[in-house]
Structure formats: structure tokens, C-alpha cells
Amino acid sequence: MTKKMALLMALIMALSLTFTACGSPAVPDGSSDPGGAGQTPASSEPAAQADGDKIVLDVMHRFSDEPFKGFFESITQDWLQKNPDTEINMTFTATDPYAEKLTILMASNDPPDVFFSFPGEFLNKFVREGLVYDLAEEYEKNTAWQENYNSALLEPFRTEDGALYGLDYDLTVKLFFYNIDIFNEYGLTPPKTWDELIHICEVLQSNGVLPISEGDADQWPATHLLAILFHVMVPQEVRDVDYNPTSGEWTDPAYLDALAKYTELAQYMNDDMVSITHGVARMDFATGGSGMAFLESIEITNVEEDSGGNLNYGMFKFPTIPGAPGDQDMLLGSPEGFSMSSKCEHPEKALDYLGYITGPEVGKRMSSEIGWFNASKGSLDKATAPQMLSDVYDLLMGTKGLVNWIDNECHTLLRDVFYSRTQEFLNGTMSAEEYMGLIQAAAAEAKTEMGG
Image (tube, rainbow, N blue to C red; front, side, top):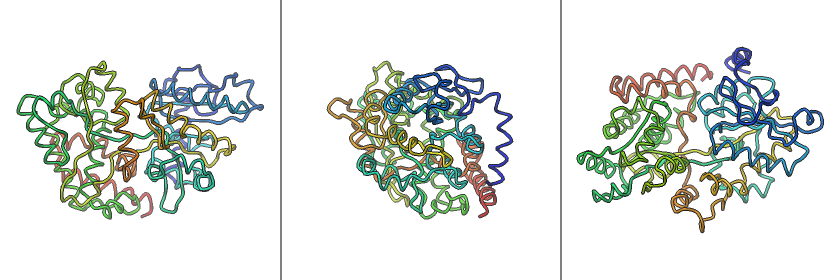
């Protein structure tokens, strides 16, 4: 165990009063502790009766809001009905504190057996410690898994040596949502290139319409545009070196070109974007306050709710930038999956549970009940699905691959810069060169920490 991971052990006692760890006595369904985490007994029988009689799996996820929390509990109950010899202790927490609390538990002697995970550095830091179960052997001999999954969408969970450290639970991609009525009023059509996007922004702005609603007070939304712009504007071979914490330098001038594109687009966003949340910006778009918003496909449900179902809208993917040296054939987005602890005492049961919650049966329920998708094939009934969901599904199943969120892809020291300092770049109080200087310093520190 590295020094950093060992030091995290010291935090466990400090947080024990505010976070109910896996395996602790369960609290009532829907409750939450003072630290923002809740625990739900997912068994139909009291936990006290199950101890010693049933196999117990500890499961941790980050779905604290409805209907997503209820959906996850429902599919877990379905699996338990088929596995009466098993009990699940389910722990959940909101997305923002999830990474910190999972890190603490993974460094303890009682990690969750099955846990929600993002591919990239978020998961890789546990992989390097030997804390994550390699699913590759099970995947290769499980013909049902091979037949059910779109293998290209599992690639973010694979490492260069062929190991597989997670299965997809849900997929989301970042798209520009646009107001069809506003576009029609000014004779606009969805752009295919960057220049066409800028032209649309100029037309809307000149007519007193806010082109793009954006909210970056949450810090993570800005990193999504960074991710796609770096991917498109920076050569693959450069990013391969820089995104690796053992070798990253981040000195290529192409990063400044990407930031220049960000500055160009930001002038068409609301002036208060660094002080309002992503949810507020989405609401502004949904209620007709702007022509466009850069949102995740899983937010279709939110847009429908925010607009009361009255918004006439469509979506288009991030436009191409002719002449840019990066890869422009991929979608910005990520599988969000579940992984297993290498310390799991009942791997066969955990594998069965993991395969169920990420499989086609759950995929079909997911698309019909909450408008999400997983990586399993045929998870959408296109005969009955709304056209919007069908269009997104076609994009997902046809994509060459996914551009991962940069805050999950890169070392946590870089993520801290992306989160805490990007607003200064966006509001003009920090130059692009100064911003890249901070990223370079964080990369150097990460390299030292990793022994690179």
C-alpha cells in the first residue's frame, strides 16, 4: 500500500461519526446520515436474522436522488428474489462526496464488495493498489456477457494488459441540446462544424437571445468542455503521455489552442456562468431562456421535468474542428459502471449480481423507466421509445468510442486544478498560460508521487 493510501486510513476514525460504512447496522430506507450517506437493507428479511445464515454482499453506489435510487433498489430486490440465500447491505452517497468516501473504505479492511466506479484515474488508483477484481477471465469464459455487451463501450474499463476492472451500468454522452423553435425562428440548423456553431451563436446573440446556458459553480461542468477540446485539439500521442501520471508534462502548445477555442465559445454563454449551478443553467434552457445548453443524455428526464414537457428541442454532437490534430470520431461521455473488490469473500455471488445489474434485462427496464442506457445490446425497444431516446441510443451504439471525463481520466492533483482554478480562466482573471502553468505544476507533483 502506498504512503498516500496508508495515510487515508487515519481519516477513517475522523469520519466514522459522519459516514456509515458498509457492513454496519442498516438504517431505515431513504434515511441519510449527517455526512450525506445512507444505508438501505436490501434484503426482504431483517439483517439480524440473516447474519450467519445468508451470504452478505456490501454494495456502494452514488445514486442518492430519485428516481435513480429507487430504481437501483428495485433491480437489487429483483435479483434477491432469485437469490434468497443472499443479503445485500446497500450504502449510498451523493456524487460529490462519493470519491472521497469510497477511497477511505477501499483503504480500510472492510471495502464494499461491489461498488460504483468511473473508468480512468478514479478507478486506476485502486487498481494500482491491487484492490480491484480483474473480470477479464470471467468475461472471456462467459458467452452470455460477450453476446450481451457492446464491447467497444467496455473499453474504458480495460487496461493495456487486457485486464477488465468494471462493467457498465449506465452510459451518458454530452451533447448540445437546442431549442428547435428558436432555431426555426432565425432560420438555423444544427451545426456540423465549429465555425457553423459560432455562426449560430452570433445570430442568436445579435437578436438578443442567449446562445448557450452554462453553469459552472459546481466546477465539474467546465471540465467536460476541457475534455472534448483537449481530445480534438491535442494529438493522441501527446495526450497518451500527459494523461499518464507517471509521464505527464502538459507542455504542448496545442493545449493553448484548445483553451483559445474555449474562450471563443465562452463569450456566448451567460455572464454569471461561474456563479450559477449546472441545474440552474439547465432550467434556464428548458424554460426557453437560451438557444442551447451542453448537457448529458441522461438529463433528458430533467429537461422534460424542468420544461413541464413543453420544450420542443433536439440534440447534436460536438461539431468537428477542421484541421484539428486530435480524434474527432468519438463522443464525449463515459460508461459509469460497477467494479468488484479484490477482497470480496463471495466472488461468485458478487459476479452474478454484477452481471445482472449491468445486463440486458436491467438495460431494458432502465431505458423504459428512467430513460438511461447501459452497454448491453438491444436495451431499447425502438418501436415504443420516444424519438429522442432512440436518436441517443443510435449514437451510443454506433460510436467508435467515448472520450472520458477529464476529471476522472487524470490524476487527482490535476483534477483539483480543473475544479478549483478553471473558473479564474473562464472569468478572465487568469491567462491561458498561467492556467497551463498550474496544470504543469500539478503534473510534475503527480509524477513525483507516482515515482515517474
